[in-house]
Image (cartoon, rainbow, N blue to C red; front, side):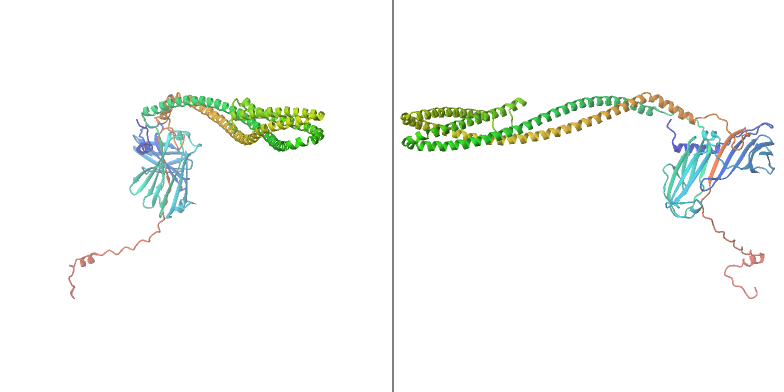
Length: 599
């Protein structure tokens, strides 16, 4: 059986309301059985204006009725027999059959509270002042429980509110929660409030010369015979939800495991980024030392070049003046002592050159060996290849050997000068030997000079390469810093992701736990809901007085005052004098016949 819709409830209530008044006979002297129809006149704001009750009895034979109620006035609606109202007790002699009497209650207390408010064009207005007005109207209606009333009414009675709006006076009707029907020229808006429930709803419309019949609210006991609904489709959805919760929980667990692996990998990446940053910094720091060493080596090569140039000039002078040296041997003899002193200085200069080349050779070897030691690979950013560097080292070694040879030769010359100084006769021979040695030295020196110039050019390339290596190492270090920052952010992100997956798995596990027996809970809840609206046995209480113990049915009919324009009384027109018998005879003269003088 399909679920009962709001429209179905409206139909059920509409059919049920005319049938709530039952019939029952009673024996004389037994408690009087009756039905109560409670009519409530409400003001425009929903407050109670007046309550009166029509009491309905069914008698199999004439007798006396005794009824109870706190009435301010009573009236016989069936016969002319007088009603006795004393000490909240009503008595009357009635004939057999249906008997009705009306009593006006002193109380204005109802099981439900009705609240109605109106706004016209956004301004609050009373219902009385709405009659004949035009504009945009909004109504707010609330139906709430009065917990000071008998709870049996709240627990077992449903309410149906009906509002009729004139389609000519009301346009663009918006009533979101209403069941709308066309009733002649009116729009009927219906609302259902089930037992133990409350409801508020709004209606908006554009009105012209507004008038409205009174809102009617009926209350009847809601006890229906309802078959169990067909829940197969619903339960299929529940089973799908349960299976989905299991799959979702399994997937969340796998996701959490994956995030754990990702977190481990990011941790390794972060550690590697730290090591790479440290290594890049050491490389950058080493390139700074290398550049300084190359600068010193370049400065030394410049000094070596300058000394070689000066030495070359001296050799040229020495060679060109060999004849003069021979001719001026005596001057040489006299200056031998001076030359001897100078030769010691020259030997010292050669020692300095040898020491300078040796130092540069050691620095170059260190610059070549240190990167290999740190990285295991030759520095790719150096301008000179390893082969070129080896050649450069070999050249420097050759130059050192040549300088050492030169020093040894000059030492021999120095010894010769000493001998020359000690033995002038052998001076000429020594001068000739010296001249020849000078020529040999001059020829060999040109090779040394060319090597020194090549060394200077190589030092320039080495300096440029060292600068490029330093710049590359700086960029590499900056990149490793960015990489480390990125790995830190990625690691922080994995921490947040891990927290999120933990919360997700907690949620999916909770969902799985709460849905595993949802099918049983849904069945039980449906049974509870259906049981709430199935026929329930309860003793119908009298709304009028607890002394009325034999009450078959109680019905509430509440109506809000109409909103209508008061009509101005029109004075009655004077009735035209009716023609008498003679006049009627005159009127019988045929149409168009002229009267004669004798007529």
